[in-house]
Image (cartoon, rainbow, N blue to C red; front, side):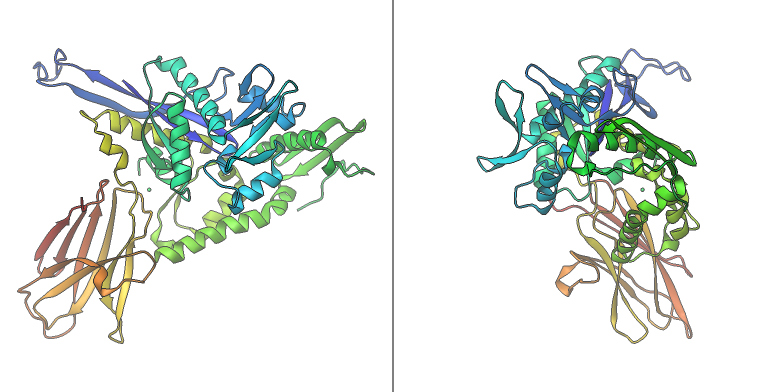
Amino acid sequence: MAAIGVHLGCTSACVAVYKVRRRGRWAMDFMSGTPFSAPSYTQDGRAGVVANDAGDRVTPAVVAYSENEEVVGLAAKQSRIRNISNTVMKVKQILGRSSDDPQAQKYIMESKCLVVEKNGKLRYEIDTGEETKFVNPEDVARLIFSKMKETAHSVLGSDANDVVITVPFDFGEKQKNALGEAAGAAGFNVLRLIHEPSAALLAYGIGQDSPTGKRSFKHDVKGNARAMMKLMNSAEVAKHSLSTLGSANCFLDSLYEGQDFDCNVSRARFELLCSPLFNKCIEAIRELLDQSGFTADDINKIVLCGGASRMPRLQQLIKDLFPAVDLLNSIPPDEVIPIGAAIEAGILIGKENVLMEDSLMIECSAKDILVKGVDESGANRFTVLFPSGTPLPARRQHTLQAPGDISSVCLELYESEGKNCAKEESKFAQVVLQDLDKKENGLRDILAVLTMKRDGSLHVTCTDQETGKCEAITIEVAS
């Protein structure tokens, strides 16, 4: 048996497989010599990315249309200069969106392939010469998923169709549904949609100087789509090189009106040009820390995923923000998310009697989970322990301090849709430690350990650190 994980990114797609070997009733335990009384599964705990028919482990998420065929991947990307108006790129940015969506509007303005609204839906207008046809973004995504399925089947066989699809954390229901339906239309059996950060965590088993060779042009090449596409192709190659080299050369033969373009770019210059984008990335991390109530010192591991995380400068900025953390990057960043998805798929098909409800199980905490305390002035203070979107399963510890002269302590848990916005009616559980020995002076420390399982249930244990007295409760998910 095998399971498949697919990550459809903005510019590329990748598929990983996770093999599950099944041993039936005939299998023998070689340690004891006794047969198994029921089927069991062994997992090697590893998932691997599958190379496509061109030998590449990552496939460009590009679809090109011609009169008689639809081309997906590297061939479509290589032909986009001469077939630019019929080549669809970055379909993920418009998938499941309407024309009044700001991101869709931005995409439509930038897309070289014309996007129009027809019958209330956004469609690509494809003109192959013989006829004009209108293609749904979901159909483009279906072709890319079909390419991923074909790649997986090249090593697994045609009967392996169980898949976990990754989705961005900010995708809404419409975008998720569109992505899932496209995968289903490609022939996949979608076991689950999993957030890309969750997949990245699963993959690791968790959570200036001036350019030289400058050429001047009398004409602005921005108005020439063919020249701009050639320039973009060369720039993309240079960007990849600068992740490992100190400089990269961009040379284009006959870029515009017979004039060549030759430019050498140093890593320092590249990083200077990209510094506004780097700052946006770091600012987004700071905002996330602030929303979650954590500090940089609370984080001990960071998973790097996505091609941009290869950039040394971005890695250094993250390291500066979290000086004590381990940056997990032993897996190629382009492959982390699909590997995590394949592991999740392996977990799902490795179970007996996988139910349809599994595809609805909670993967991230739906709301903020907070604990109530009292500050130095005596006012109520709420501490966020599980921010909404925390990948599950997850575990948190919290120390509650209480006066030593009281014999009982109550830990109260609340849920909220926003940070520190808990209300009395949002309290959903409490744990009471009773019959505690009174202390004449000082405070007592109560250690609370909260474990949220994959299905969203929460187990809470409270322990008096001095006496060891303990109380525990489990809050199941409401059905």
